[in-house]
Image (tube, rainbow, N blue to C red; front, side, top):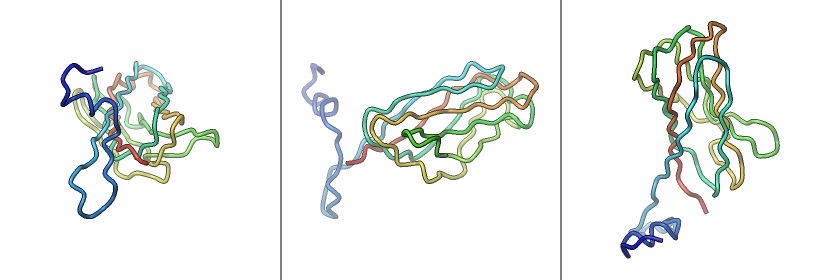
Length: 142
């Protein structure tokens, strides 16, 4: 529990506006961080603890992007199989410390509580996909 009373409400509530046009409170963006090891195809998963809408996905490359076919894709698995949140994001054409952002969010952007976010990093066959930090921005939903 926060010692600072001003911060206590931020940690104990969702801070979701009621949708009224006259509402003055807003939503706080949440940020999930996923880390890939690089060097081979891999999947990194994270279970969300509340219903959210994904608003942005960015990958920060920690080394050169490698082969042109190296790519990542964020999916959601809510028991019905994987549904795409992003299109495939090519990282092979980027350099070290570059940021690659999704071009479009798909139908899976609304994620139910308890669902699993799955980041699939696909190496094009050269074992040179870089390690990455992936930042996923989300808004809590009612």
